Image (cartoon, rainbow over all chains, first blue to last red; front, top):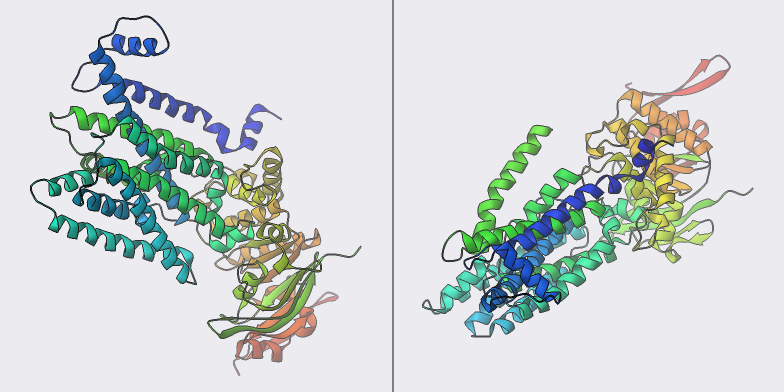
Length: 345
Length: 262
């Protein structure tokens, strides 16, 4: 058996090993490069010194540099990476589950629910920590409500989920509008509005630490199930006839994606487009196999979000909310992808 | 050697109290090709769904090799019965190889990815269907006939003894219809038990070992096509006048189906 023949037999995963390595490299460059960007200048030498000091080397460092790297930039970069990766992975999984490439992670109302929770938390004067936790809980509750509604729809579980998602999202969105209406326009309202537009500026290491837990749990479970996610894109009958317990698998995927999405929204506010654009782009360069697209979405989503967050804090003197930037970058990019795809066919 | 059997006893099923299948009974063996005939909406797909474990609210019993399928897990059932859905373009354009590889999932635990054995099984199924040259192509870009071969290859990779095919010849040109039916008969000779739903009585007469005709959710007749598919039966099944003629070709005689316009 020739080398070419063997490669053919091994299928798509080994073909894309190089690509995944490349994406991993891109992620590392974005991750470490972002320490150098921001209002307080940190040079490459200083950054190397900071990491050398962490590894126990004796180096001279100004405390300002250390505070900037560890206290300000590290939490932001980690949270940007985690949020970008989570939203991309959740979007990718939902798109397969709903057999629709236009679905985004908020399809089941996780974002609207978490947004409502956050708005209510801010209105009631909760601390940042309590607001985040409350937002996370509301996001889970919204999706649980959708799940209950969908289970009443007998014929097609997918249609039930979509309709339930639309209903619950709209319910929570009107809740948000109402809270904005009654919020004090001098301080509470701007805070809610700013939060809803998405930002990582207030983040601290402890807070992202707590959000990382549900994100990691979701990501690990989805990653372990990556082969089966492929079968979820088939029709219900086909997947069942191939031996898949579709009800169980669907429940697990919804739970994991919800954990990840709600955790994202509860620390960063609503950041749109990323869960739609990144999976689309990944499928375009790698094909459809989840064994490839899942890790690729993780790496690319994290890199992209880090870059967008870099823009958010360097473009202007005051920070631009992330949600605005992702739409600004994401929407035209998405249009470009669709046009390019159209041309190819 | 006794072949494994698929046995359906007194199967009844309804949606929202509206009966679709009524007291359907038949059995078939591995190595046998059975055609399922009947007008639109008679419950052919419902019957398939019952056998595949998707409709659990039925009365009666379905036995595979003597075991009630209610006692089998989805995965155990899939080791016995494969399904080849009606021709449709998939939303996601998986490659032919990946699609066939999905058939091997039945041999994997929940958290496992396909390994060497599964890759070889997929490759073998692709070669068996003679579609190696399409291996890298996207299933969404294939013609209807090619896609049908991919679906059959996926079922072969699944290594189930019984295959249910939902109108495999729908939307195919005449040549491809014959090619697919020949392939199906060839597979039954290799030991697969195949239940094919079709709208062509000719296919049943030409290729099937036995035929099952459903009418209003009940079994109208079941047996060798050359014996049971006559003009009165077909006319009754489809509610139109149909003639059946004998044609002598050498020392073989064929039955042909013609519309009765008189």
